[in-house]
Length: 157
Image (cartoon, rainbow, N blue to C red; front, side, top):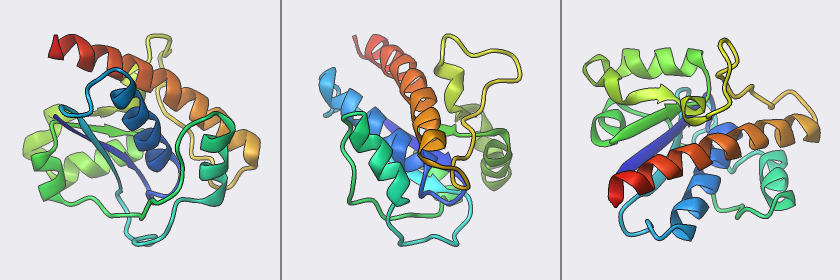
């Protein structure tokens, strides 16, 4: 199974989500079955490393960090993924426009968060914020990824 994490520039939220989900996939023994990647809907950071604050937030909470290079999602990426998880509604809409026939596999990442409330289903973009904004985004990502991995593990058993 191929899971794609998506945010705007692919330097903050989606690389953090991919790092967390990949580590959780390995921890629960699904590494040979599930692959996690990340993309941005915009290409202006293509080839860049993750934002240093994103990597720092991951390290503070014990997740792997570093080695990321930003990529822009294509229609082919959407078509070949089994699940495309977007950080917010704007990116969800952009991905659905990119591959309209594959919209059924495109969801918000926080749709896997069992505690998500109505109107509170996005991971806010921490880019303009401080370390606390990155920590807050990462906490939301972790909860959603736990829900995602729980569902993926149930599908594999």
